[in-house]
Amino acid sequence: MKTKIRITLNGKSMALEAPNHRLLLDLLRDEIGLTGTKEGCGTGDCGACTVYLNGKPVNSCLVLSGELDGADIVTIEGLKIGPELHPIQKAFIQDGGAQCGYCTPGMLMMSKALLDENPNPTEEEIRYAISGNLCRCTGYAKIVQAVQDAAAELRAKQA
Amino acid sequence: MKRTEPLEIYQPTTLREASRLLKDKGAGGRFLAGGTDLVIAIKEKGLVPKYVVDLKRVPGLSGIRENADGSITIGALTTMRDIEIDSLLNKKYPFLCQSAAEVGSIQIRNRATVGGNMANATPSADVAPSLIALNATAKIVDAGGERMVALEEFFRGPGQTIMSPDEILIEIIIPKTSPQLVGEYIKFSPRDMMDLAYVGVAVAYVIAADKRCSGVRIVLGAVAPTPIRARSAEGLLEGQPLTEELAAKVAAVAAQESKPISDVRSSAEYRRAMVEAMTKRALLNAAVPRTAKVSWCDRRDRRY
Image (cartoon, rainbow over all chains, first blue to last red; front, side):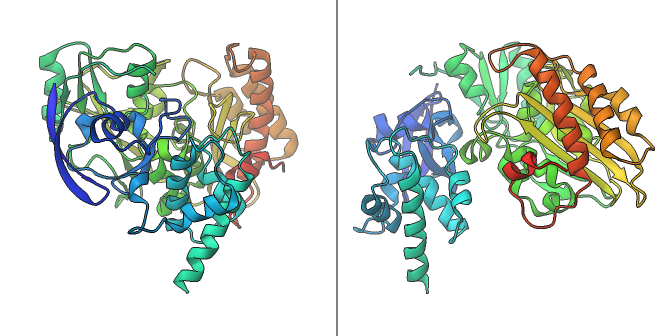
């Protein structure tokens, strides 16, 4: 069963026809061609597939296309500000917050969601926010550092 | 990674239509709320629903509101994250918000709904013991009408509730409580986050100035086929002043009332011992006012 859906993806509205059972993750990667969003576990445990659905971070591996008509979706490809990387992306590069890079899109999406709500998080609050994002390389220290540095940078820009 | 099979999905816009779909299309259909259990069941556990009825287009099923009589209504499609951060609930029942915060990750909690969590009836569900400790009621509808069921009567076994397939859980209602009501939820699990409860203990009671406790409710999760009340333990504390000695005795009785199983997470003996330790801790912690914002990880490890 296919359904016509209209979605807003990274700020642009689009209409497409998708089978109901197609997961949002696969819709993005295989049908729309945005491969920045990664699949890790496929069961909502690892956070690699995190996207914003109607403004909130969710696991795109657990969302069915049949639910999506009218949805507003932002992926890692929508994080940049114009041609510039987002300050959170720059901080991950500068601090070595990525090693193999597979968890990085999800980490970035979750970090931005945190900083949008809380511009000055404690280390504990950062670890809490990314508890659903698994990284098997970094040991998390440099990720936490990058989020702290990005937070400082964003606060300085605000001031 | 497994992929979902083709699915028929219906998106009714009224409850009557939703319930009728289940009746007309017959057995094998599933309601869809946040999908964090259903989609995993389809992908990982081989569930093949004949069709899926998405409830998210039915208006009015989410949100938290205080009613004129002092009760609080939580719509079934309210997400765990919304319960976690709701200001009214955080003021009145912080332990309920904490139990919602114990579920999965923020990404999961942005999708998982309280109604879906209750309807899935996982014995280790974190929010169920807290809601039962608050004497919550489930409002259930079908095409013919509605009924109210105490949440403690709602669960029948793992994945089993008293609802028939065409019934829909639409609201959880917490009755008005005394301003002196205190409560605590402790999820016992070796990992701070992203794990299921080995043991979950929710307690709620009204504490008088002389520390006498009344309306005592002690609810255990993950140690029986459903969340259960430890009624003998409750009776031991009822009308008595709370002391550390009494809390220890009450906790020992609660452990005897639990019916844990041994599985990959833990042996039954260990679970029973943890029921005792966590019940005592929950009873004593509940009496300590929440002043500064103490993180829930810290709070569950505190000992008074």
